[in-house]
Length: 354
Image (cartoon, rainbow, N blue to C red; front, side):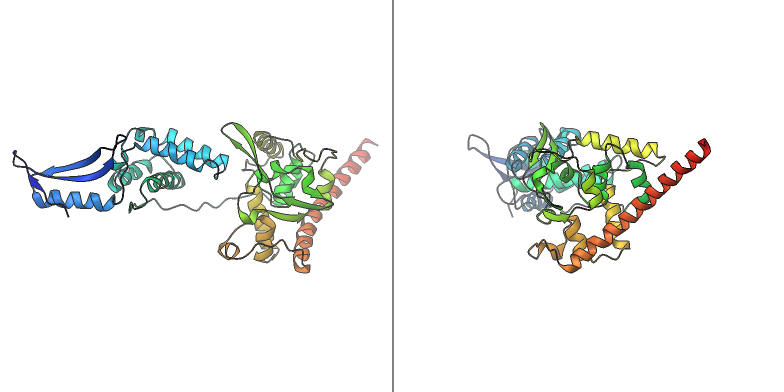
């Protein structure tokens, strides 16, 4: 621990090395006070918290450097999210030197943020802050208390109500791919005709919206997300014919899918729901049908500790096929009931006319 020196004024002072400036000149952070031991403890605590090479860059500069460093390995949506955090929540940090950002400083920021932001947003902002700080100084230690995450329970409409709402609409194919086959929005938008061979769909690309518009990525969200699925006959009939193997199966933007889906729900008298909740609905259906976790995770491209520790395999075993058939039978029964209902309504209308 550094020893404090007495100043002519009678105060005690300790200098803590914080790195070098752009010209290579050594820089120090000074701690002063009338109590020698207190000054030494403060200096030692700061040095311990920031041990390793301490950057003299500002947080804003370090954050933009971090984003650029990670740009080629992060998804465009993640990069957008980081820039949004930097612009909307951390703009006051732009000119703050890294060596002035202590655990106390961050804890006070968190305490202030929870008054106006959700716990999840605070966690996301903190995750970005720590990623930036660790990229500059991997030895930094933080002990921050974050707000507990709140689990929200959603009341989703019944699957048959959603199917009735989207049938015949512009978003029907996208909605059925999500609810029936558990595809993400980016996977649906990334599907091209060369991904379909017979009735087998290979999910290996995603189309996401970044800062400069749509970006087609030749990789899925996670390792387990790349998968092959059997396309049910009903969905095969919804896919329009095309001679262009490179064409997108669902040639709609993220906004178009979302807006047409919400419009279909509203027209059917259903409350709004995020498009991604269709995947949640699919998971609930598989759980209620007793589909084994192994096949549910494989079908939906979900990851878990057990999946990450094993080599991913696209299986078409008898058990896997039975799971597919069980899910298809469930949705097909809804479709048949819907068609019978429509036929009955038409017959009744004709009788009334006659």
